[in-house]
Image 1 (cartoon, rainbow, N blue to C red):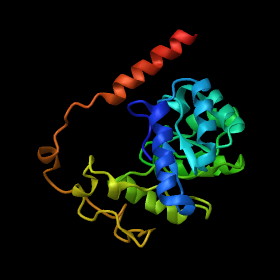
Image 2: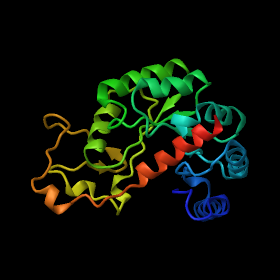
Image 3: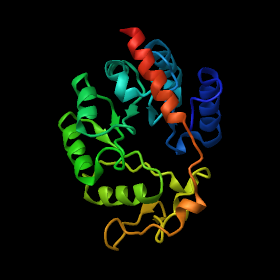
Length: 231
């Protein structure tokens, strides 16, 4: 469930409760907060309110969780009775190492397209295994999904796939590739073509010009400013 929008402290609980009521315990319910619970006190209170809903995990409770709230996230993972997941926006083992040093989380979600490619991500998996944490890659569509499919095939059996590319109407990932990712009967099909398994289509720069989305830049500046203020 995509949370952290509008009035997250009220709306997230209401939405998750409605989903659990509609589908019962037959589904796994994952809540992605989009890093919108601004402080530890709020995140802990929300985690406690989620407890009766038996979440599979609560993802990214703090803004840019793994970069600026390593200690708080690890503490929340220890104190909350809801599994905590984070790491979809980390770059390399150094970022993961910081949260490991503070006690870790339940699920690490290093994204193969950001974490440093297949080789670096496999090293991250080895690192978190040492600390008894689980790995579930942050996986959207396109080439990232293809890369993650290869990673799934080479990773330990406990790795949980987190793929949502078929359900995202905003980003037309599969319109970029000659051979888009395939999910059949709930299973990712590992490509057998050379490389990641696909080529980019020609003419994409004309079809999908940059629209000037500055969300990431704006939020990163806000997070850095907040960190300096706390110091």
